[in-house]
Length: 98
Image (cartoon, rainbow, N blue to C red):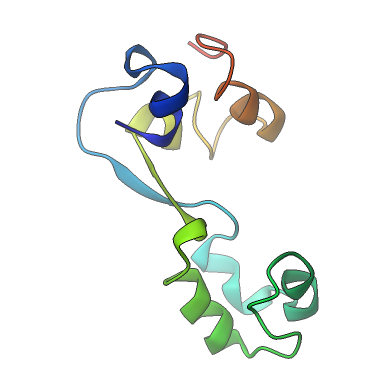
């Protein structure tokens, strides 16, 4: 069951395999990330971290990944489509985005 389904119920999820979502920062923008800004919220990242160190964190930090069904990842209720406020609210309001 996906990250959203674990909270809002399996009926909210689409069938099929789960997809891995970068929850904090997409890998595609890792080279542009400001290490000082990341360090503020994630102290394990050095304030002077290199792009390679940031990329390594993105690929290894357990808090960076969420398993999502296709609907909650790429569908109209997905992390890449819905507004952040709505996507987060649907974790706790079943059926908010259907």
